Length: 93
Image 1 (tube, rainbow, N blue to C red):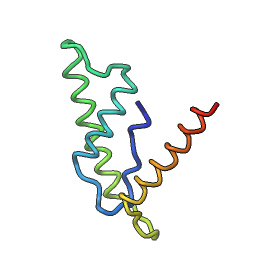
Image 2 (spheres, rainbow, N blue to C red; image 1 turned 90 degrees about the vertical axis):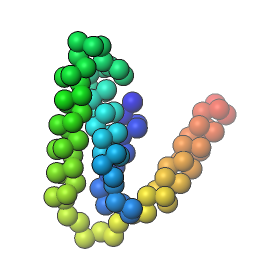
Image 3 (spheres, rainbow, N blue to C red; image 1 turned 135 degrees about the horizontal axis):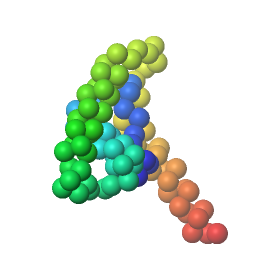
Image 4 (spheres, helix red, strand yellow; image 1 turned 180 degrees about the vertical axis):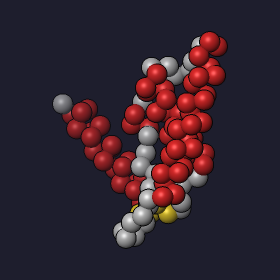
């Protein structure tokens, strides 16, 4: 599950609230061990997602860097190429 949490800082186009919420959801899923909480845990689960989303937004808005922003599409293409190479090696083994 953690592989789905992506770096969100210093990218163009800028991260959206939806992307921050998706990363927060993945984090809560990993920490709790639930991909979908039971009815009894649903409120606590969603509260955690909302709070982590808010904290993450605050963090990203307060970070500074002198580095130029990375292009999100270029980074995605590089990650896919690395994954393709990794999985090709596993298939050969």
